[in-house]
Image (cartoon, rainbow, N blue to C red):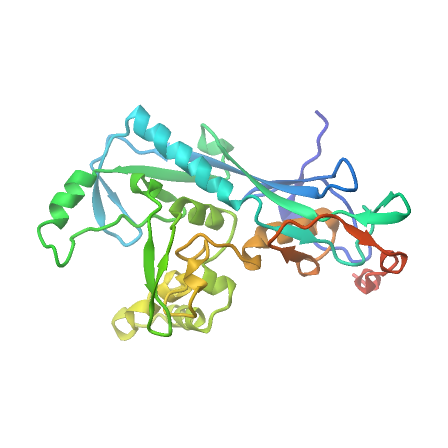
Length: 325
């Protein structure tokens, strides 16, 4: 079809070139397409394409979770698998209509004259998660286990005070049938109070990891999460580290627990809320498409229509383009 996809691994910022508009990039984590609006009163769209191979695990009796615990599993039924894949698609769509990118002042190559004024569209962020039929066609392969919940309950009921297994802990390469449940979660903040998260979306959280996002404590550069990562790097004996600071960037504090109230409610924590830091996959990729820097683009968490640009702002220059390579 004559479409040229640029390899993201070959990209680097070229300040002497000035701003560009390159439509297609392919990458190890995802592909992207920057589409122009059909009219200056509409925003542009930066669409990320994440191809996932969901691998249903059958003919096995057990699976190991992220906490190294062995869970009983059973084969998938067609109905059960359909229910899981439908929920995966639904949770993936939670990333849409969350972020709008505002171009830097010097980015004027797509300004359009509308009557007597110039209009500068913003960029809407969109995620298209596609399930594919083979790992070779996927950016990410995820093994999916069908938990034998009756057997888990039988084992857990042996001791009501200390469940033997509890909930299978999924990660970015392993999901399970109970991840379709999006119930409440509770967490303790640094003020000692316990808070309730209305909805917990495991699959949407793991999609965030597939896009390259870390946990919210890492994204927010939380002091407590930084301490947990420091302990992990120093390879201290886990017994010498408080429980909530163990496991480095996967520590409880990096999910936002035992930190400021509300942090854990982020999609990359235990919850369902989105903040500007969650837009990083789009801000990094828009930089490639436009030969700018990710930090040049501001993030709006609410729908923001195209801007009217005055003549003075249209001629602001990017001083960095004169920097020698």
